[in-house]
Length: 198
Image (cartoon, rainbow, N blue to C red; front, side, top):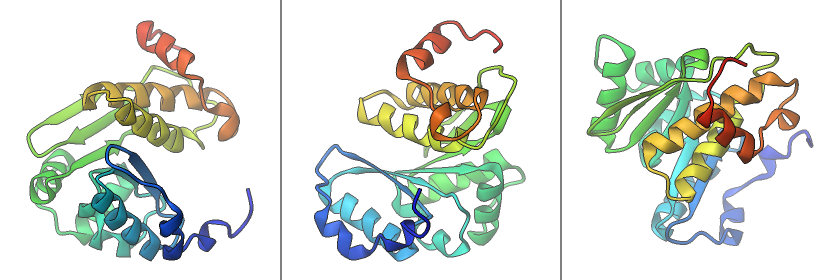
């Protein structure tokens, strides 16, 4: 990790990105927000699918969340964006439905050990996490997002991409550290076939 590296990703770098129709572009908010916004526009123009991880929370990002095809937030981030966007509804699922219905996009909210909840303009999906005893949760969200984007890229339907990502995020909690804890695809598949307590 190089301190400050994320800050050096600027909109001019987008001309070097070779995005094409069918690609899946995963973005996060540690790079400058104007770069995230421009990348969402560039990806849409190229026909690519976009996944925006809202970590870390930055209130200004509320202005472009609706540009992403899939928005992935944790509970706290979504609740804060819900306030910023004045989403209606008495509970989180209702506010998620409001976001999906208003934007025509899919919102995915990770719920830690409770799994993940997703709202599309037409549906609400709940996917459980694996039953694990966490050692370190530091890389779980990034692992979830990576596996989710990879699942979409490989053509998995939403429910299967979410299940795979939720399992991967759960397994990432079993080892200390972020990168060393990312599970191999074969381990994720095995866990999905046999979801016993770990």
